[in-house]
Length: 418
Image (cartoon, rainbow, N blue to C red):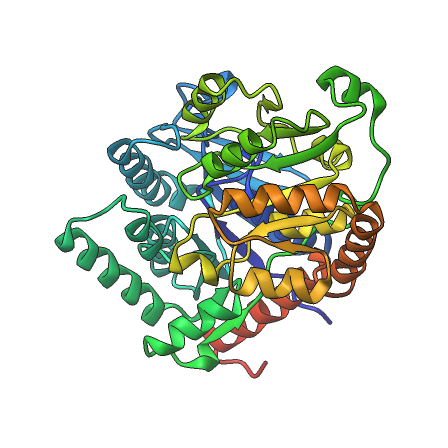
């Protein structure tokens, strides 16, 4: 008879917030609830990436709610937009303290605590709660932190960097198990002395029911004025990591091709600057749109002829796999990827897109022109991507793999034979 577990998932981000962290936590938790487990997500009041807390959460220290059978315990956070280093650090620390002080009494009895990073102060809170509850702690590493913010130039003080690296290694060593989302990250941790048997790779996946091929919505196309255009879309955070100014440079180079139009969908620290650049260069072939809910995102993917996945040219990003590539492939849309390393290997193995060197605007512009002239190639890439994620990246299968790991960790923590 299957044992049903009480799982606490600590994540600063959760729907209605958008992005990969919130989507991963929600979709995994939803699957585990459907399998009969009791899932509690300890998270913050929604505020990412705008720094604006919705009215129904304002002025509250804690809120408890249900979402698709998941028990969601929210606690106070210092809200901050996804820009400005000092405010973001206050945002991170406030959630850590609030999660421990306000969240621990609210979550009840649990069998295991999962803490997801970045930012890893949320994982510090998860570790503290696991010690209070005397249960195993699983450290989920979706991004190498603090290395990512160091390479982005957000922290330069060597004392702070050494302190954060010490906390990082402490969490690796004290975790009962470590879950990473890329093979590259697993190799990095092993190089740092973490035993291979303590690390499991459970990659991001996609909800194949929500993200599936569909026809363009003619009303949306008319509303955006792109009925007869070759639509190049970026969907996601407009942040420091994404080198979107280079995409705008490609749009500037393609101004003489009025049948090519760029859509930028989302919010983030760089959005105002990007809009200013577009105004200065009078880029009439660019449209900025606000962040869209997960349920309507498929309509924007369906509207697109090509979807962009860019990141800056930094060594760190050769180890990441942007989770949006799985959504794009599930929608049957071709990808133009400007991320080298593991993500490039996946897209090229799938035959689902083209690689363009990161931050190379001229190569991007030329690649888009080539693809526009080859509709059969676009269809082939889209079909190949859908088939690939159906085989390898169905979120429900990955959630089941994770569940087997959780069961093993809990049994080991109790001294039972798995």
